[in-house]
Length: 343
Image (cartoon, rainbow, N blue to C red; front, side, top):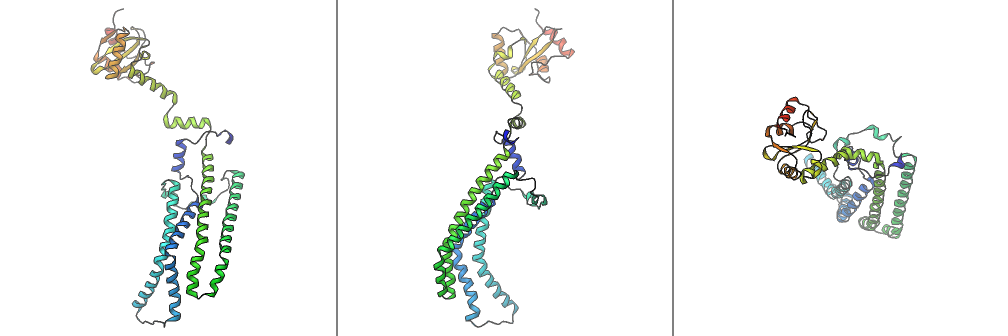
């Protein structure tokens, strides 16, 4: 059946999939953008974080230990040291969260479904899902390719800076720590950019699989179109009827035998007759459309008469606009017999 799915996904199927939380998103791209944002923030706050950590590590070694019997003072010192580390570290972690959340929302186009956050054990059961053996094989190969690419770039980054890292062993601890940050920041940036590229490729593959999943057969596409827009034949008939009302085309007057005039331009076109023969309501219009019908009927020399109450009752009958709506009410038939012109 999959070979028959040649039609693109309909708007209705996309909306249904979105309501169920099925949208295209790549966790790899989300993590990559978050990592890239964290690396950018690390370049700004990394030296401050390294300086604080070095100072906290050296202080007990080069300064006498400050003893205090006051618990409040001791808690204040600990709190101050924690905040000194938490400020730059929080900026780095916050950058990762902001970047990842922004990338995720950009992929799902603002989808927010709190109901899908709840744990669902069935999501862990992958048997029977995933597009068959070919889909699993494709994902497995792509996973291996991703691991090989990222591992190769990470190895290249460390290898390219190996001599600089070896030179750090000749420096004292504070200088070596700060220099290591500068040495490793370049390869980390390259790795972050490559992760974004891999994430974009992964998003493209997921988008292709998602579109393939939503593709429909011609019959399914017609059913979706009917569900959203209605039956095309009915809509075409309504358009022709509206156009006839607007332009007073001869289509509405075909087979007309009598025109009833009412108030406010109300015009009822009757076919068939005279009584006791079958009489049907061909069309009914009011206002500008009704006046157009009157002029067209006058030009066609179709008999007409003034019957405001009768025209109003006929126009208010169900299925008035249908050519097959026959008048069966005996009271209406008797009134029509009284106003029908003599042949």
